[in-house]
Image (cartoon, rainbow, N blue to C red; front, side, top):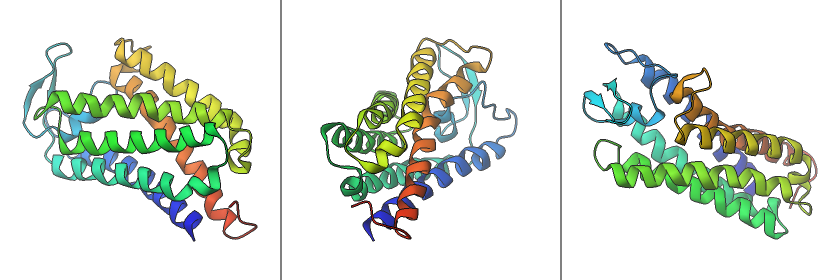
Length: 214
């Protein structure tokens, strides 16, 4: 039952986050939302105008309450899924680090949703850093876990996604767009965690129909 709930939490977190990125972005009009130009956080800004003096861009998100609610909800689901899955992911220190890091990343999304960038930039940035750093550290820790059956199965994917997310984080914070825009690079930093919890969540759900992992 715990594995099933953990898998469902992670799949729902991914589905809601990606759906909100698309749907809330489509609500923009003059300016239109660009995945290359705009940050994910721009979807949650509560006011309209030119935002960010270091990288000015027009921002006006009519459905910002929905996006901020999804930030909070997805963060809670990520953290809850990790706590429920800890028995399936253990034993070992690397697995424990992976679980703690996912919880930290989830708390980052909650913090970012409760404090939009144009309301409290400092707390929002703190939330974003929790998403970037622990979120990708979780994947690298999962790749190092040798004692957990589930994490052993996902080792290669964990390593590749973790390295991709880490590279995206460094390039995004350095404002290097590599041809996909700074906003696009932010997604390279953020999406690997959701890809990983989707794969792990499906594996947890599958384990409920075969032999248990815990």
